[in-house]
Amino acid sequence: MASVKLFLFFALASLWLLAAPFSPLQAQNAAEPAEPPATPAEGAPPESPPSAEAAAVPERPGPRISFDELQFEGGLTPAGNTIKHSFNVANLGDEALIIEQVIPNCGCTVASFDDFIAPGQVGKINVNVDLYREWAGQEYLKSVTVISNDPDLPRQRLAMHGRIGPYKPVAAATDSLSPLAPTGGTPVALDGDAPANAQAE
Image (cartoon, rainbow, N blue to C red; front, side, top):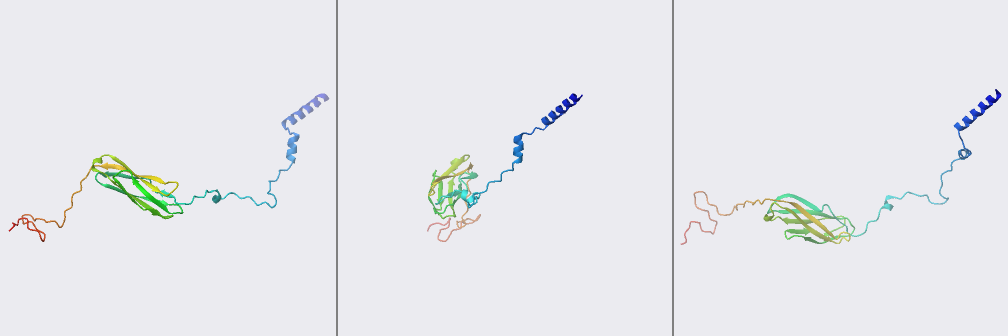
């Protein structure tokens, strides 16, 4: 009987040890305190995060050309008309922007422009495109090439696009100073002119 009780005692002790394992290494780690965070060396300046100004790449000096649009959509326009549009060109640099040339790609296109644009100012490039009668029912895409002293963008193309409708002739306006003949009467003559029904003497 004593041997049975001793067997049961050892069996229960073994089950208890298996249910709660705990190694000596775990006990050592639990006993050691956590290391404090590292502190900067005595006398060393504290570190600070990089600022946005330090991270930004400095812009190059000189003129910088910028356009508010590169292509104008003119929609539908009757043939025989002229499409006119002004492109805004800004100088975002710190030196004067010089527009040296504006070259049309077609004889139907004419351009005028501000050739000197101070830093921070906005100039204009005016483009006129004549829509010939023979182009009725077609699309047009005309352009000019802007040549400037911006070293990063010395040439830039600006375009004019749209559709051409049928030709609509404009009725001629009546000149208020031209001779008029009242109905059933004699034609009226201006001073110095002979009446229409006068005979030479």
